[in-house]
Image (cartoon, rainbow, N blue to C red; front, side, top):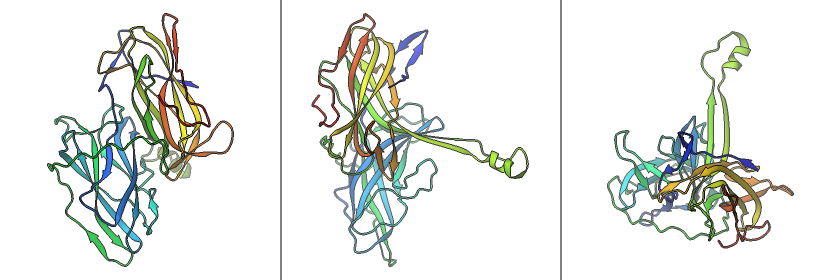
Length: 355
């Protein structure tokens, strides 16, 4: 168990972070009015932290239903605000070749910070860590919450040189119907684990966000400071990469919280719990006002990536493909010595219990 917390400190007292009461990633959906031989089958989002700046990332899985192998596929990704207005349109071109009838979700990348060519940075640069995507036309423009990403195919090039292209894709200023949020389903058949949070009835802390963060850091580089091969090697940039799972919470109790513990329940592809990690945030945390939070904390999980799949390593047994990570309150200790514990915590080998 690892203990870590990130909060704002002012004059020795802990201050709540002023952020939306609940943050949710955008709904990612295929454009139902513009169809093609490419079917979007699934998607995930995460936050990329690159040398202390942040980017909103979306990854797509899709199937080529054309008559032959495709050597190039391009998408338009429309960013919608809460009214359904298209505030911007990005263009996304996964790399590689795309066989007929095969899910394509992991490919080579031209960007060292983004190992999967099926992932695309939507934008944002700042220091706020949230699952909520935002858009800002320029540094002086207001920041807009992006509630949906609508994906349209704009180009398919096939192995024999024939191509399909369309300019009939959403444009900035268009108004589209907001896609409906998909229902929660514990089973996730493919892709990296989807990160979400769950409330527990009667818990003194409220979960307000949950998301994956990919941390990419590059140091060094530049001209060698001394000669020879050793100088060249010493001048080469050094990169590190790691993925953590983050959550934010708010103390909704009148008592001051000394310790807040959450469970990170790791589910397999069928929706059964295969591991439970815990994450502690040490206060004190005063009662957070409406629309405010108490802290943000992140934790890594045992395992390694295999394409776009994360193979979780349980404490006992072989690695298992993780389908979901669900974060929920587990235990709270107050400064007055009283405590609260979740009455129905997740259990390894069982489905996730109803909260």
